[in-house]
Image: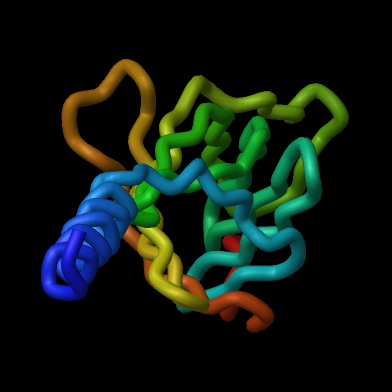
Length: 139
């Protein structure tokens, strides 16, 4: 085999490896644990669950907290509305099934909250990793 043929074969092999690497799908990534916050929302993620607080609601989210190769996610949890005024011991609201979906790009999360039995989402929030949420609880 001549020098030109060897160079061509090497070039084809390198191009093939590069092409295969482009088609390889990265595995799901885990979301960084800790605090994520934004206007009217505060999310505290641990390894297996998360607590979320809104101005007039709260909820829980079930792990694992993974995002796909595009940074998108859909997590199951609960969402409970709150009301102003005194709370009695029988006022505990465990919430109703909800879907917390959205995307993460670097340290920014776009989070949409939707009750499982509803077609329209309740709201969408923008959160930043490492920042506390700005919440004004119903009183």
